[in-house]
Image 1 (tube, rainbow over the protein chains, first blue to last red):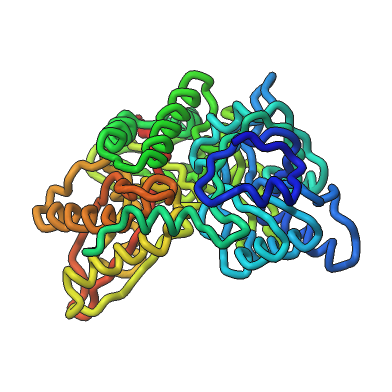
Image 2: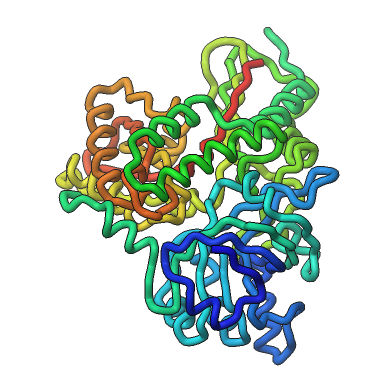
Length: 183
Length: 281
């Protein structure tokens, strides 16, 4: 399924755990340190360096771009480290997250409450994923280096829906299908 | 006494940092191709194919396999009849890491203090260096960049001797189960058994340097590797945790004697981007 950012409720409602999607448009990039700063800014009553309404945050810290390239290798980082911050961002309009690995129950609950979806990209396929990034720029927290807040333009970025707004979980479904009872 | 110059160590480490990050080993590629033949899950097969495509792109374009170019872990075997000249060994290794991560467009992923300001050191130093003095007059260097996602799933248990072989299997399988999709499966599960707490973890890490899937030379450990691998692959986690039979490509066990009161077991999980390259000077 092709989807474009920003995401509307209508699009989010259609997405189900296990759906393969190709994402195009603008996405934002932040990981541990940038999340800490964004949530601290919100707690002080300030606005974020970008308008989060309908947007997707990709949990990623790229390798430096070689000359003539938009970005270096650019695969997902493990998402649970952003769990303490994610509900706060959904509260101000974030509609999607891309990473890898399980989310906590409070994050899954917030996804239902605020109608947001969690996608996974293939971890360790950073060279492949970088091919779908057409441009990248640092928009805030430059001092964080690989952890700076970035804005990317992507075309047909490959991802899979892990958690939908209905409580579906592609990781749990996968294990249910393939686990043997005698472990 | 044979002399080995500082500059040659710097050059070797620089090259190994770059090559380990760009070029996935043939043993890993072979193991993933085998998994592609046996994996039952369609999405699992797709992931395995992406991993192979990614390795081809990294090799052809000379870019890192993964944006997480790792913490630079360097294993050193220094012959007792060799003499390092022109500077300090550890500083030569650090300088090689500095240059390799800069020139190779590799991500710098080290912060100066673990829990205070967490300011990036900007050159991926300091490395973690494990040095052993061995017979001979050569210097063997192995650079093994380690990603944070898989390293974070490490675990140590100081079991009771009464827990025995079954206790070891249960702890390792449970560690892999809890890690789920986090460490980028299919993984290589490094298991260190025996010694002391810190030695067990070093054994686990060292086991990851072995050719993927090559059985231990110790018959009991080779049997244990087979049994743990079978159990781990019954968990159903699969490639990237999306369900499937290939949760681990291999289990590597290293063991050594331990105290009469102890049964230390350490698990160090390696993601599918199992990177290490070596040089002998």
